[in-house]
Length: 301
Image (spheres, rainbow, N blue to C red):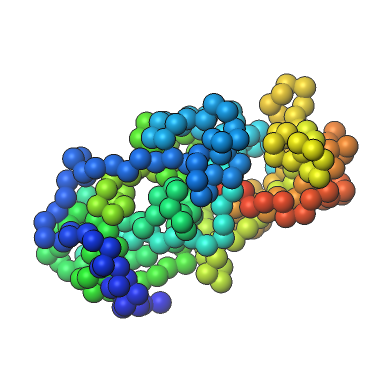
């Protein structure tokens, strides 16, 4: 669907002066990224969880509590990254293309309107193509306000990407798709931020929202009891690592989505839950407990 950027034009009042000359991403300022305080910090809120990195400090996703070992629908051993609770409404990711060209403008960083802590931020981004003139110079536009001022044509796609924003120096070495584990850069209000991409399965917007899949989980203490649910932690096997958190799909044909509607089953059934069928048979003690962004980054048969 092709749209003129009427809605974006009003963003020109935000105060950016950009557009007169390109900015250098290597010398541009960087916002302080903090995923663990304020809006968006639900499971991992520094006020309630000790030991979380401070504002702007690197995060190692390959260490607990961000690494979760669970099970696939047929009992496969899978590993997730725990990226906290997220909503179903994606934010826009603006990719600039010279008119008539398939690939983005070389060296141009993508543009988003939100980072963690902003009202409306999401890790899940909807791809929007922006057609710029043939003489456009990379990184002249560094905000959506500039796109609106210029009146460039945009094409809103149905493609979704899972791109959590983290401080520079953060680590995520596991990837289920074509990603390499390195951080990428983008523009946010004339500042450069850093993010990971998890592309283990293709994702598409459904009715304007992020699709969800189902995950079944048991906690050390059942929800509804003092200290129960998330604060008590996932129930684990004797190794203290392996949970019986079970996903319902591993690929797009099965309805895969990293945004998972969590169904909490009675922890009395923990030992018997070893795959999707046994998880579905367990008694549910909290339906649709939360929406959890948890991409699968490893699968072992």
